[in-house]
Image 1: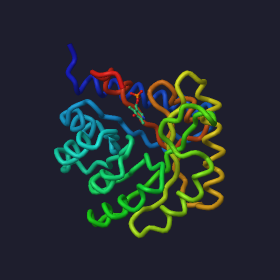
Image 2: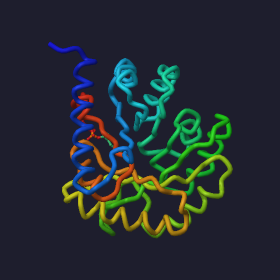
Image 3: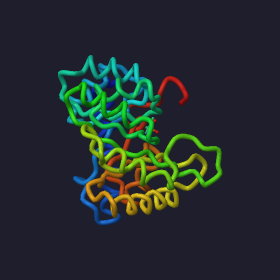
Image 4: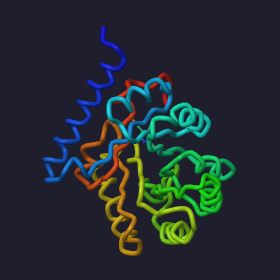
Length: 233
Ligand SMILES: *Cc1c(COP(=O)(O)O)cnc(C)c1O
């Protein structure tokens, strides 16, 4: 029987070597990739072990759970990423504790996020979540391509939000490569107008290699580090 700390460091080592292998395939430097560990459904004690193992970035997708864990782990100096669906009446509260908000997909969220950042006394990094669903598909979360320029301008003109790039989840049941290639194109269009928006958050436990090959700068890894979640998402 190994301890939880040993399990987590073994899993982290395996994920790090996957990242290195994917980088070396395409001639990228692994130092360009930020590993975010997605700790949703796992306790604050795991977050502590991850911090001790050298993790600097953690991600959560539910407001109440994220808020509680960020408070409990406030002494660790971690960067908290919010990657879940945002309700406009919760957006200000999320911006009070989340350093990076990756799931901004509509204009209505921008005002409340900016207010929350102001209340926190901290500028916040923001990513536009892009929908990679084919046009006309049953649309889940994410901004459609057409709505991105206006959303980007709205974020860029706030006082307390910094537009840092894009985030996406590859659609289920599709090869991730073509989906991430669409994201790369959308990102290039955004960069033409907003050259500071250099981050591209893509790739989860099962598709991190495809994401890195396509140019992701941030990967969001949950189950490959922490094990399977107790509840199906
Ligand atoms: C849960 C989640 C992840 C991590 O998924 P794994 O398959 O466990 O690596 C990444 N991104 C988002 C948006 C998530 O909700």
